[in-house]
Amino acid sequence: MKKLFLLCSLLVSSAVHADELGNILSDNKELLFDYQFQSNELESDKLSKSWVNPIMLSYSKNYSTQFRDRTNKTANYRIVIDQPIFRSGGIYYAIKYSQILRNANATEITLQKRTMIGDAVSILFNLKKNKLEQQKMRYLIKNDKIDIRQKRDSYDAGLLDSSFLDQAILKKSQDEATLLELELNLLELKQRFSLLSDKNPEGLRLPILNLMGKANYSAQNLELKRDKLRAEQSAYNAKITTAKYLPTVSLQGQYIDGDLNPLYFNPSLKERYYNYGFSVSMPLDINAFADIEASKVERLSAAVQVLDREDTVEEEYNWIYNSLGILDKKIALAKKDEKVYKNLFKLTKNLAQAGEKTSLDADIMNNSLQIRKLDQRIYKIDKQVQLLKLYVRVENAI
Image (cartoon, rainbow, N blue to C red):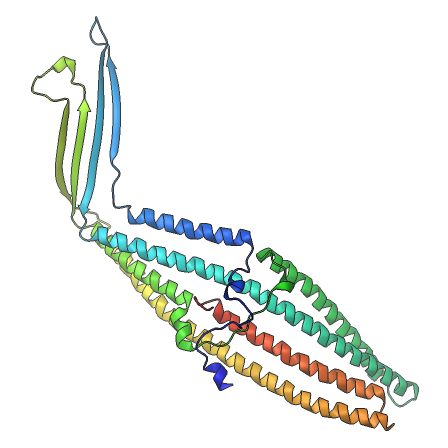
């Protein structure tokens, strides 16, 4: 038990390939996530270069009929550059902001994908659990039938009140209804799985997950990583907002190639020439202080969100750790009951051979023995489902 809890990473059994779990989603789902990743990369690239102003190209041609004897034609071609080269650090912060935003969005998409993978794998576990529960109910129904037969014999002999027989019949009906519910639930699980994956659930091998260490879980937790990146993103945004109200230095330049106006001919003028210079500007905005303070509040809020997420991550881990401990106790109890029923089955079988008990009594003990064996397998699946809740929140789990 202790060795299990000391394992420091989520593992998959040697029989399961590491990529089998990651490729469980349908082709369409995988394609959608690929497009999200590509879109994030492209949008981030665009944002990282947003501080570079476009170079404006223009061409114009004008016609004038001012002269009586002819129509004058003039053409003009311009290349205009107006580029900020200094924004009191705003350019640097904008580049860093875009890089952090890229990573934060990529982490969010990864989390969404792993959550969907986790949903699909959880359904696989529940499909297996459902089949085990159906086996368990069939054993219970066998015992119900034997119980009804025994109570009917006792009732016919006048040894038992009718209410006991009624209760036995009612229990059998309830167990049969539960079996039907399980069959309906099985169909629902298969339908839900088909919405996530185009693979045959019967042909997929389930992973064997083990508990990872708390430190590793915290270090690889995608939600915590995302919130830390969002906090860093808010910090850079606050700096960008402040820089927006500080001095900006820009370079301007024009290249002009145009026909001279024939009405005002001047031999000293050139058709091709440059205009260039620089400007220093700073906005005086009445809302500047409020805008800067709002960005600082957003930064502080994001920092608090990280602290809150750290507490949540620790509580999630502790809750799953404790739930695994309870499930281990249930498994141990089922094993103990298995030994008891195994001995009772042997004893009852021997008594039946000696004529002191009936074969039905032996069947009841055997059915109860099989039920407790199935319970152990069901509890182990419950443990895997709990561990899966950790797996879907971390990266590089397999």
